[in-house]
Amino acid sequence: MDSPARHCVAVGAIALTIGLSAGAAFLVSAHGGPQWVLDICRSIGSGNTNESPFLAENDLAMKKMMSDMAVKPTGDVDADFVAMMVPHHQGAIDLAIAVLRYGRNAQIRRLAQEIIVTQQQEIAAMRLAVGEPLPSSVPSPTEPAPKPALDP
Image (cartoon, rainbow, N blue to C red; front, side, top):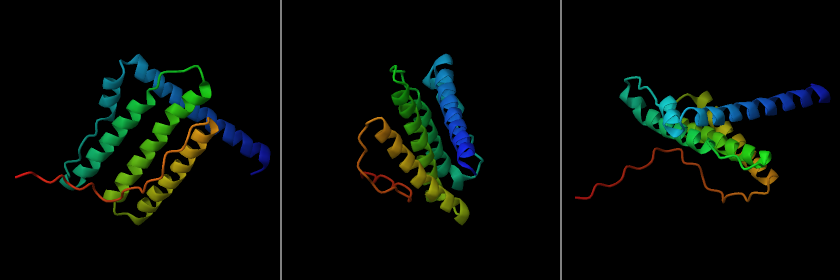
């Protein structure tokens, strides 16, 4: 693709992302806030108990992402964009981690690994662009969280 066309695609992608983020923020504020967000994120189980841990983790990740994306505007469009997009990208990472924990399809697992890497890179780039410090690096868990020990 030539440079002007690539530029148009990039500008279009950015405009779409901004529009979707603004629309999500508007819908959250227009429909009473977090309860509405939690309602749309509610997972419907398939009846397959083997899928239950994945669905629970997926539901938690979606709720956290939607809640964290509902930021109060500061008047700084760039900072507000980053404040909304970082939780969106982190949500993608959290969903990909859940697939790595519970999924079995090798192609999907590879895509999930790529999503984790690219979303982390984009979060870092956005934070750096607005002068925010980067968080310390931690390994991404891919195994189910250990169950808490029961006290006798």
